[in-house]
Image (cartoon, rainbow, N blue to C red; front, side, top):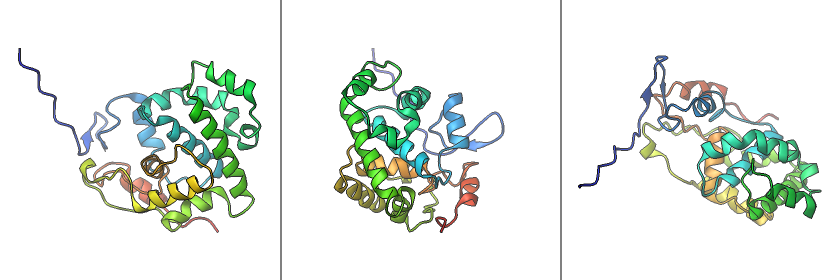
Length: 212
């Protein structure tokens, strides 16, 4: 029997029952759609929110984002609300408890990377600020590429490579340029909602220079 051909990948906006056109990647999953409509691509300037997102993007490595999104409440509980000052004090017993927690992604290297990123966070907060440092790689204002198709979206950029290099130099792990680019998309540092998506202009309207 001949193999059934896979349907072509959808790379342009998709109309939904509510009359809105959206990027194709959330599909019809209600949690994913809510994330697309309410979070992804909206410029985020809060230090702690950026820390949480970068940690979770590191945990996504090798997995799908919807897997992490479904586990996010469990991560928040297990990871002390993503409070860096608590995370830097994790001891071996805490890490062992995390490795035994079925609600999160149990990966020792990524848990260690979370603690390393918490140290980076605290160090930067004593200097210029975590959010300010990360936003500096895009000049303090969202990049607006005006993508028309998913085929136009790269997996990394000059900016993500520069940010990844900086974080690695500070001791970061699971912060490669592809992970960092996904982080930049999610936090609105680059507006990669397709131009015909209902969220493109909404996120563009939220763009502003990094607060003084």
